[in-house]
Image 1: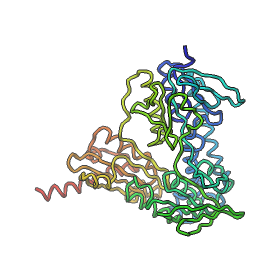
Image 2 (image 1 turned 60 degrees about the horizontal axis):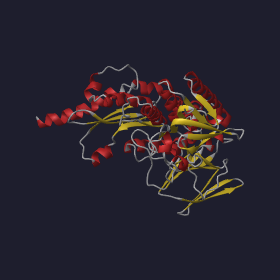
Image 3 (image 1 turned 180 degrees about the vertical axis):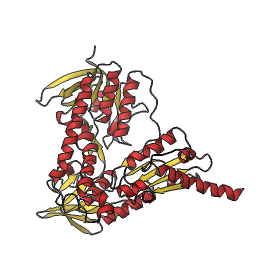
Length: 467
């Protein structure tokens, strides 16, 4: 008899949910992770600290209140890294306690250390002391996550040349910073540091940024970031980063030189699979350290599953949790529905972006007719109350069956608001539901009714011309 029914390597969102789901089904479960990383990258260097940092930045800079109290309004004049990290450390500490408590309450054994495969059913646990012990399990779930990818030619010193993990450990708020990469993480940090008053230059080799989002939303984001003195260098590649006594010099292949206090690379993520000895379990990873899985998150070895960022796209904490739960149910022979194709995307820039479904460009390319309904926060009483005059909600509606094809939101609370659209779309509802529904007043949620009326009025005009 093996030690455990299910053994999880990694305690991030995917690993936690897999372990707890199996434990709820009465299985003997264990989790292996480093003692300083309980909760995974999401809790320690990713989602939670970066979103907490964002909240601290918004509060201390008073940025969102400036429409009401004037452009010079600021809650604290000289914001230090200590001001920002105090809140982050508090939240991270509380979250780790919650996770430890959840695992303990569900009788999940938590082993401190790192794991590597000895064979397909055996994992060697290397403890902090250096001792090794063998753990055997019927089913193994790999949930090791990722680390920031580091270009080999760049010399990272973790104080002036950083990746998205080290940026949380800065000793002071840099006066100027170059961010290489205009992906989600790059743009979230660009907006945070710009709000703090840092002069930011974003270098991106592609011609634009966040090209999977709605074009109008991205144009709005660019406008607001430029307003915070962010400079964009699209279609540019970094040739070299020089470290000097008084800062850094980023040299672009076009010959441009950008001086700054610090440089942050946001060049994608690399799966944490190098030290797992996957070959001993009959597995392999691709060049980015990612493991291939089927629709049930099963690897090529049927009793070994992989979930979370280590399997690649979409690499979100929210989807990782569902993958972990689904994998555990499948491994335990429990019926489970497939994850819904409609998944919201949330980007915590300043202001927030969130969307679900198709963009205008995608629908146009697919030759799917649609009508657009828009609500602007400045026309809502709640928008005036909170001082957000630039936020907007956009509905893409089918004129044929009146169903929602996409919902795009930009502004305060976008990542929360999106779930109303998600619910309507997921239940197959139409735009008429939003027209007829009564929303609390004054709220931002009311934007759904305004946008729905806008879309249906446009559809009605077309119908009248045909009569």
